[in-house]
Image 1: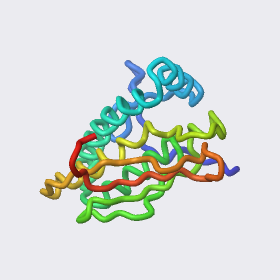
Image 2 (image 1 turned 135 degrees about the vertical axis):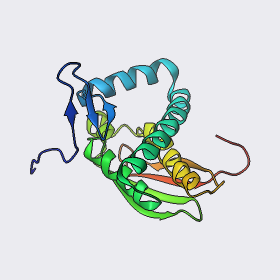
Image 3 (image 1 turned 90 degrees about the horizontal axis):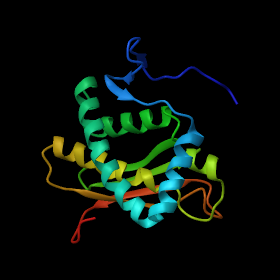
Length: 181
C-alpha cells in the first residue's frame, strides 16, 4: 500500500476544533466507531426501516452538498457529480467510479470499490452499503434541477462486495416513475 496525504482542503478552527472542507463543517471519526454505531441502529430498527430513513436523509444531504459545491467551485452538470464521487472517495467511504451517466435520461451507474463497510464487516452475504443509495439520487436530482429539469430519480443498490461472488458494489439511478420512494 502506498500512502499519501489527504487531497481534501481541510481547515480546523483553532478555537472551536470544527473541521471544514470547502466551507462545509465535517466530522472526523474512526471507521469502526461510525460503522459500529450504524450496525447498532440497524439492529434496533431493522435493515429495511433503517435503509429507508438513510435514503431520505442521504438524498437531502447530497442535494445540499452538490448545490453548495457547485456554487463554491463554479461547477455544473456531470462535473458536479464527478466532483461528488471524487470527494466521497477521498473521505474514506470507498472508491466511487461513475461507469455511466446520462443527465437527459436521468440514469447513472456507480461502481464502489474498497467499501469502508465491507472492510469493517466482511463478506456477510447481503448489501451493506445501503446508506449511500439516496446520495446518488439526491446528487442527480440537484444537478437536474439546476439545469431546469423536472425529471427526478430513484437509486438502488444492485450488488455489494459483501455478497458472495461479488467483488464490488453497484448502484443504479433511474427516472422516478409512479410510486415515489
